[in-house]
Length: 289
Image (cartoon, rainbow, N blue to C red; front, side, top):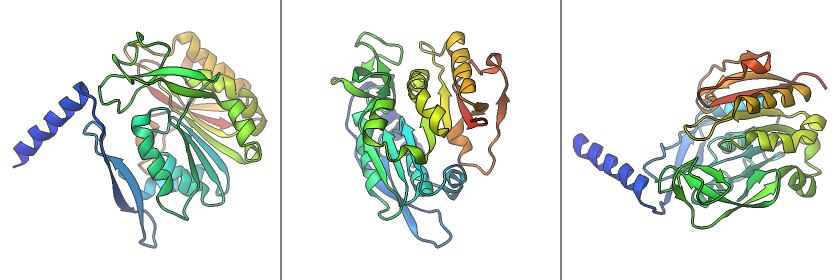
């Protein structure tokens, strides 16, 4: 029976890579608090996506990073696997703004924002972040578009040959925040950015906000076969954040690290120390302001 299940699952993954299909969601329940009450998370039934397991480690981890009642932003939120524990950290007095341009997974993010009533305030926004308002194509390496990123035209295959038929919209994040969340900006405590190579563009756009409010930052040095940050761009990311008063650390695979009771920070002391050759997550801690 196990062999049969293995081949069935393998076949499902192959089909998801080759053919577009809309997949349903299911709501799973987890115990993450000492009170024994269950919390909910909507997992996607796409066979290419490993079901997310919400743990007490993640919730406690974000509670150490994000003050209750503060404002946090998740750029590239996907289903909300980090958005939800961020929401538990900010609580009902705070707010999490979660941006995700991919309509295939935005449905799950939107559902997760409505679960666990009375536990958090999450606002899902079906937009990508950029340095301008506009429309981009969305590309992926597999047909079900379970993950991917923005590309400038439909012939750009740097993130994969599969494209959504519709373009996705972007906001200039700095302007959007000042227009819609000006009253929350003094409470801005945390920003996570994961945009498959657009992180530097977004950081440059957010520079005035980072300089004024000094939130903790998790951003990405993206690496793939056809699109990666160049040495010049990696150096520019270091120089920008360093000039804004941030101490930088390589935290490698942050999403995995958040699920364990250990968080290793490797100091990045010079632009030449910026990691390359793989995708790495960078922690920016405000050190001077």
